[in-house]
Image 1: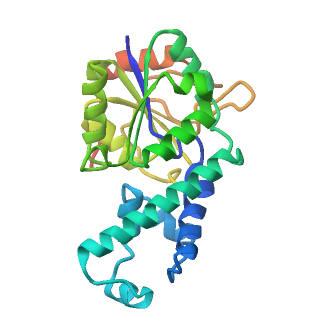
Image 2 (image 1 turned 120 degrees about the horizontal axis):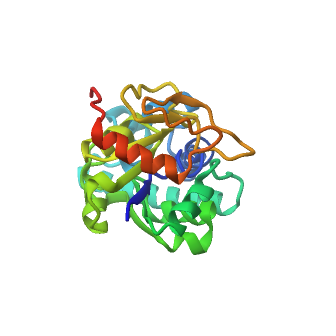
Length: 265
């Protein structure tokens, strides 16, 4: 049976703008750090995979001096790890509050895939606790228990490196030709394709203007009858309006195997 692998942030819910960014800024406030990220700042940080990695970009000599941090690299790494642990707690609280709605079509498509016997997984650079929180909120406890979760520091190199997707395929023991990935960012899309996987792109608020030239399907969301999607690119003629269904994914797997995309990195 095929597998359906989701990215988390921006795919399951619009968590970057309404979850991660406020969680980062509240963490900075709690630790007395002299920084607050604007939406424009965070858009740039999203080009870097991983929360600790994004935090580490702040560690210039000027910032270290202003924040009264040690210069020792090991001590700095310990501080970043502590900040990130607290940020994950704050983020999980935001998700648990239910204020961030799931993206259209995720639960519906997940139910279709589960009923058809597909394997289900999430592959994300976010911390595992964060991913599981979003997953439960998006698809419910019962469906969430069907998922394998690959998250955080489970691989050394994060997206756009293909490592996390290669780990997922190896663990699921499913041929790459039978896997559909749903991503929202260029980095995630490139990671999936570098692993030899077929990818559907559902653009999110931070990635709508990124270049997905060569993708097999680019849509505004997975869509529902009451919240139809917009098609941005459909080179295989799937015509998924008003929503992406399981038969579209099956057709995409067949079409992509005959004519694989060749993105430019």
